[in-house]
Length: 415
Image (cartoon, rainbow, N blue to C red):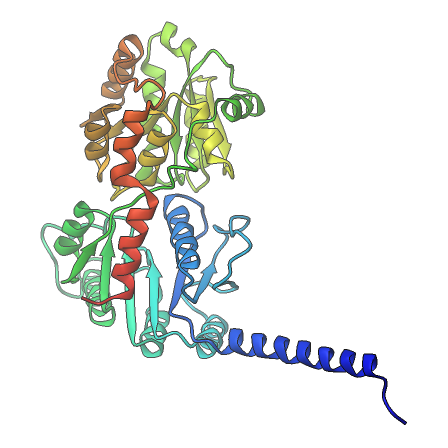
């Protein structure tokens, strides 16, 4: 029996398609990634947004990479459509690993073929050393990028075995030293971060790669700002001050709440305080606002549309006790907000360059209240809704293309 020509052509075409699918799957599964990225987070803030920008930049450069994330922070934020980056949710923690957690990480690392690994913000020695050893033995090069400042060392070091004094001090110093020995390279996001790392850790060679943002994305949108206010019950005629970040004690958002209570009755009726974020201090901050009888304090929780949140504000308050290079100051500036900030990280540098705010060298609520009242009466930091010259100057230093290219080059090349 002779097979008909059309049927034979169909069989050949089907065979070619099968070969193509197999070849594509084979190469996708067997191509060694250039980089493995590891990050753990239970919140979503500047560090997480910066990490996703890095991942997107890697994907746009067509570099093969594996992105491993654990915790709840990235849930709902991982974009689809990566072409060369594989994003993987890891169902394990990174601290106080159980045997089950260790086996999860062992399996993941066994299947990964990258030679270089990037560990994002290991929270200054809070990651389990067992995991760090696993990473060290798996990868030829281990790189760390730190977004925060390290905890300061005591002025009078105590070495010994006095319970809860000398023993824990010795233990912490040993862990810090092991981090220094196990990590190949360290990247800080500001010169202040580099200085603090040298002063309070054992790291010896720290590179600096400054933060940047996507200035095409972070643009004030009046319509979305109005919708944000309406959605959260904030009157359109109020001057909205915002606090953005994870609700930790280090953010010191209680200073903003207390400052609001000190304002004159007239000023209090003119303003609102919008607190964006989640964290362990939520109930304490809410109780403080209730105890001070403040009606215009709005806790809006985690926000997926931060452009809308910034667009609803006129002024961002940064009351933090410790920062390295907070993305909030850049995001809010690009969205047309003025900035009133404590003297932390690179906030003073940005404010002085853009002339859009003031640095407050105090954490006294009365000092903050005085500055806020003066700001309300004078409005001297307005940048006329981000006029072209303002944004041109901003983009020259803080555009995401420039900063991410520098960061990726630093990660991938050991000079």
